[in-house]
Amino acid sequence: MAKKIRVGIGGWVFEPWRGTFYPDGLTQKRELEYASSKLSTIEINGTYYGSQKPDSFRKWHDETPDGFVFALKGPRFATNRRVLSEAGSSIERFLESGLTELKEKLGPINWQFAQTKKFDPEDFEGFLKLLPKSLGGRDLRHAVEVRHESFKSPDFIALAREYGVAVVTAADAEYPQIGDATASFIYVRAMGTSEDEKLGYPKKALDAWAKRAKEWAAGDAPKDVETVSRHKPLKSGRDVFLYVISGAKVRNPAAAMAIAERL
Image 1 (cartoon, rainbow, N blue to C red):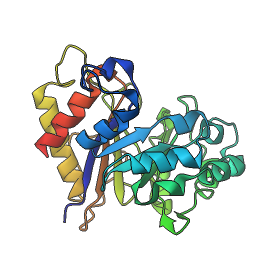
Image 2 (spheres, rainbow, N blue to C red; image 1 turned 90 degrees about the horizontal axis):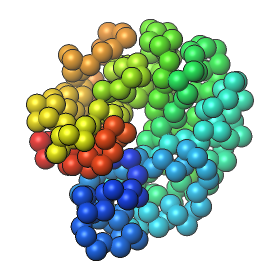
Image 3 (cartoon, rainbow, N blue to C red; image 1 turned 90 degrees about the vertical axis):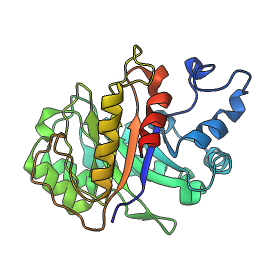
């Protein structure tokens, strides 16, 4: 039973998108409204760098259509630290900053770690224990974006599965690719767009991304995505969040829309 597949981009304020993605003459205050009419999800990066106000989350909710979902980056103050298990206060401040104002549009939270952060099983489990399963009566979905080779470990995958946390699949990038399904959803960040390609990726690559998304949604695993451990099929399927992000950023909206069209 296939689940929902959402394809989107990172953020919505980017000057080179004006005239390429956004129509000429569209005011900046309507850019989120426009982007959310073309895509089904957006990853908010601003929450990584600093606190947002409840009014901002409320405004984002109201400017986007029914069925739209935001992913949020967890704050760097929680992940860029020597002892992760001491991040409790930073996590708590973030969760209490107004996330629930997004209501049903609150999607997964991506906790991104530095390339230099190595896998320490005890400390990383201490961090996972700090991530609540719900907030204000709403279930929370957590994902971890790890960027050091030491995380390509069966022990890490087992830990993520134990806590029901997704491992972000970094694709077409310099970071280690970990495609293991460890939660009830899949979180992918495709970072290989090229400015030389009108749609960011060649058509064959866009077809491949659509195929992978369908396989993940059906609870299966794409054979061309590298994993650490043996795949565990899920008959009920998995929701998929696929973000075309980084790379040639000017092409990312076109690539995301092209993948979505193939779905």
